[in-house]
Length: 334
DNA sequence: CGGATTTTGACAACTGTCCG
DNA sequence: CGGACAGTTGTCAAAATCCG
Picture 1 (spheres, rainbow, N blue to C red):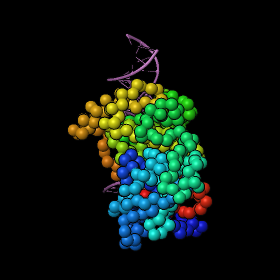
Picture 2 (cartoon, rainbow, N blue to C red):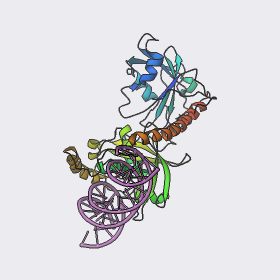
Picture 3 (cartoon, rainbow, N blue to C red):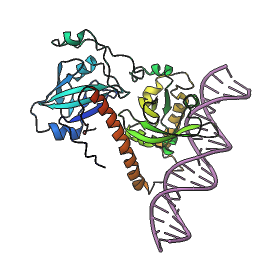
Picture 4 (tube, chains in turn cyan, orange, green):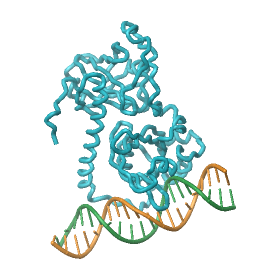
């Protein structure tokens, strides 16, 4: 399935999602690091350049982590959880950096007076980001979702993991027509990794997302008791349920939110989970804990389908990069 | 190749919780 | 307190896989 029209980019790229705890450091993918950096460059400093700031940021590299100076870069560019950052290696440890919002589009910065005027300055200005992406800043302000009708929250439970399916709130399902029939969708984690899935409605009125859930939880390190929020994106061929926020067990418990119809943090199930999780930990006699002996074959199929979606996603990122003026293939993913 | 076995998907019933 | 809703669990059928 090699496309002869594709070729390796002159400037190797990698991209990284902005995840909780991102301010202290960001990791360079090991593969990228060993291929393009390790042994090829002396010193432990990298230089980050960004289009909006038009200045160069000096960041310390410890192992394959960017540490000192990264925080300043993050703050200057108002990077938030759910964003993606594309690093284009221009050589000599210089990276052109592009920030993509959680909608997979390039982050727009208000044309502040800092542009041009600040070119010589060390300050980028406020970088006040255009608030056209309403799903931003999800980790620190979960309440903002309560007004965002394109979002819904669910908890990770032993049951939904076991069945590889997760419920969809009725109101949400109704609003977007998922309450009738079956709908192919894409589940996507914070890093943009997609899983083919389906929304299925039952006669009883229950609506579930079937398939991909377990894989997403595994890949995204979501554990039983964690609560996560999905945002519906309609900008693709099929609806995308993108994981845009997560609350670990402890954090979730600390939020006594009132029950809401669509936007809820599933407080009730959380308390249930506490009990059930203990049972699970002590060895739940699961009625469906038989291990699949066909998993290998199915995984092969799954990987094939996933790779198509990943390709789509990379293409999307490419497009955003392209918008900056130069088209490059991203062949170094994390 | 075909029967036996295992796995998975689909649905309904049950149960607990919340809100009006 | 009852209705609505969501999570869990039981059951069954179909599909997939194994194995002689």
